[in-house]
Image 1 (cartoon, helix red, strand yellow):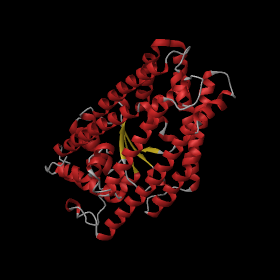
Image 2 (cartoon, one colour):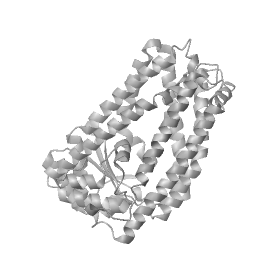
Image 3 (tube, helix red, strand yellow):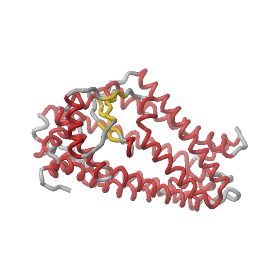
Image 4 (tube, rainbow, N blue to C red):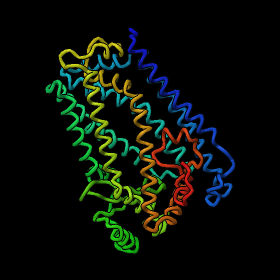
Length: 418
């Protein structure tokens, strides 16, 4: 039962896969034994060779895992796998919400079983080979189980809540659902570090000393009120260094990975944090949140048009998956794929906006005397993570939320490369 909508879905999936494969091909063509002139002080010949090997190992892995996922998806459509899972779920309950939860639960478990070997290989083969992995199999298993439980509780709860709203609010479904999802987004942004992170990592207040004093002095200098400054034990999973800013208003928090403190000097860490404070000063976090909320509203409105009413549903969406029973969960699957072109365009726009924000945050650091230290920190972080130094421009345009290292260094040194 191959309908017109079915072939539209297949065309979207094939086009999306082809675009990704072409961008990967372009990016792979940039591999070169010659070290870019701008960063010749970063690597010696042997270290640069290692960086190129890491890049190629990840690209080969990405190609294999991506092709596998594409074949599985095509099989689900051409063999009417979604209809089969739908029938299984309907055999377990007559309640629409439970049917949806069982349906998505089966898909989630199936996906996790198929993707788990890839995740294990990447962690214990690729990351281990290049000296990044610090996880033990026991920790990997614990993280996996916790992730499953968190997905079941949060994901299942959100699905059930959306279905309740859909069943009882009719034409106002998208509007009420938008309000609920917006509340959840803001709540998670404010309390993610307090509620979710502790399930996986230990966070401790940064102890008194040279680093804390330097950070507090800089915050005072730029008028940034900071009460919560924490260190997270990222080293139990990886050697890669990181830091992030989270929260809004009085709930804002800066979190440093302990690996960052082992990689950078005090001045360089302050420079990295000055960049994060720059995001706050330019209201980038708030802007991206508002755009995300707006996108959610548009998406829910279009979803409500596609689903129709709870009484009649949309038979075309169900038939595209080989089923004769319209339902919320089948409609969501089809809509998610039909939304892919919009999502791709929106993703490109958000990446462009994010890269602009990164330049502004870098400039904030530079304007406050941290330009040289930030350049030094970016170089060290690039070396410690074996960052690809020469990605293709098209790949950057579609996929990068941050400018490349060379672009950021050039911009900080007033040599604009965009």
